[in-house]
Image 1 (cartoon, rainbow, N blue to C red):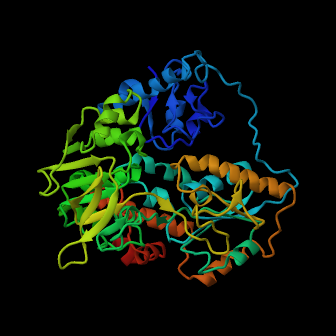
Image 2 (tube, one colour; image 1 turned 120 degrees about the vertical axis):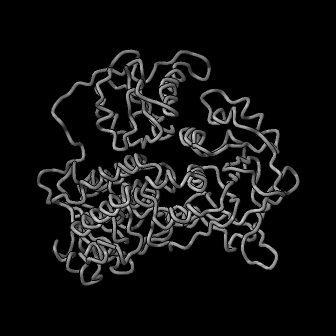
Image 3 (cartoon, rainbow, N blue to C red; image 1 turned 60 degrees about the horizontal axis):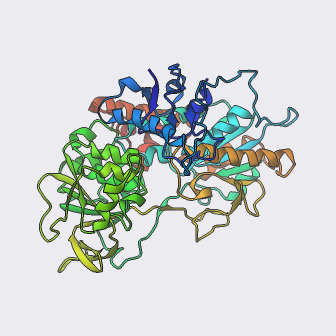
Length: 560
């Protein structure tokens, strides 16, 4: 029996570090790392020790013979990766990653290459943002140095992308948050939630109290598609929709109107698949997740029966991962249809090899829908490739989206729809006190060091742009922390001009509602309690007022 990595793989390579026989690839030392959709276990070298499964932060690794349903396909997917490596593009034999036999590691005394010299006083490092990028940076500092870390977030609760970006029906992916949570109460960590740099405190004040500051603020805005009608009511960014169903305090419970029968989603990435899946999923199934209460109630009465996924290019170029498409194919009660208005779509699917994403759509029904009529009975998702949005049009006597005009070969077609969902990517926004590249939506940097700002660093999407999943932030953070420590060793960091506890006093003076680790624990207990009462894993507090009241111990906040 061997193990296999499945759909929820986060690619942070924790499993690689514990594997005693080097059977998981690509490793961070291999060129392919970060370019594959997931990591893979070689069935020929796996020794069935289970170390990888124990270490996996998102419970993505299982014995291959225990997989069932749609998960069974992952045993073959893991094996196929290594079969593909056995021949080069020219057809010549090349070595399998890791070799054909177990490659046992030689274990010795643990060494931490990141450790500072013993004569260094503990660095004081502020990390702005408590999502995966910020927490991987904090983890690196806490495990490999004696640094003191100040965790800051503008929201009154920690988690970032894990809490507010992962779809509620992907609970295993959210488990990486448990790994990060153990650092919230670390003895060398001080936490200040609900504190916004640039509003409550200045970047200069933050820098004055720390040797270095790492900004891990993500990419909170959405990209525009640039068509007429894009700003009409009913035209919504995926950023807003995802925040709505995840109970983000920035999005009101009544922000989404699901009274339309058809929704057009522009985009072919994983986020596009997420929003499509949530829109047509059985609300009874979603009731077993931590989806926002208001979103669950809206979906129970939703009129949406059809989602059209619009892709400018063909299925062979879609940005979603094979694993996410496979999951969609096995969605109970939902029909998948490929719009064959363009013969190139079917040709690409038919010609796809078994390891290509387009091959997943082989066997999916093909039809050219009659857009003039109402959606077909039941719930379905339509893949429409080789078609771009041209405009969003309002209805007669209305200012709300009523149809989306799209390309249809050399012509155009109108698809009746009361909602246009833009899922074409995220974009970073300017950060107070830092330079900003408008073209890329990132902060200019050199290996994480902010250009022209000594002692200031970036990590995550604000550093590299909105690419890569949760696990990609681990190697990104390792680079930034490595740069920071190199600067500390060569004397490039200016020492703080304020005492360590002075920042705590400054934070409390600047915002009386700042929450610490104890308050965060109170929020967690309250949400879990609400979940148990409702028969759900967790019921999230959805407003700043509720979060703060709960953290501060208000009976109203805890019991509501």
